[in-house]
Amino acid sequence: MNQQQKPMEEIVEEEILEDLKRFKKEDRGWYFNNFYTILPGGLRRDDRYDKTSWRHSGDERSNNGPRLVGKTPAEFFEEVDATLLEVGLDIHVIRELEKEAREGDISTIDKIDAYAYPLYIRLREKGYTCHDLTG
Image (cartoon, rainbow, N blue to C red; front, top):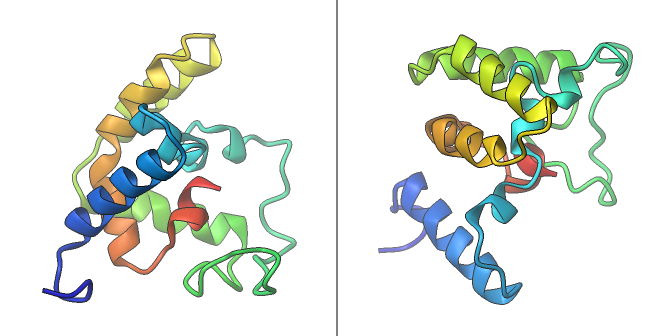
C-alpha cells in the first residue's frame, strides 16, 4: 500500500514516529508544536495580530503548503473553525483548555492536542501540511 492509499491518520502517525525518532524526542506534543495556537482562543487568534490585510505567501522560504497559500489568517481560521464543527468537537471545550494554558498550566497543551487530534487529521486530509498547522 502506498502513501496515497493509506488513511491520513495512519500517515500522520508514521510522520510522528519518524520525527520523534529522527529528532530523538519522546513527547508527541513536540510534534504538534504550535498547533494549539491556531485553535479558538489560541495565541495566533489574539487581537494583537492583523488577520485580514495580508495573505500567506507561496515563496519557498515560507514553507506554506498550497492549501494555505493566498489565504488571509482570518480565512484560514474560518476554515479551522468550520472543520472543528465538522468533526464534532466542542469549541467551548477548546476555549476553556486554551484559557487554562494561558493562565500557566502548560500541561493543558497536551490535552488540547489530544482533544483536537481529529481536527488535525481532517485538516491534513483537506490538504494542509504539518507546517501549515504547527509552524
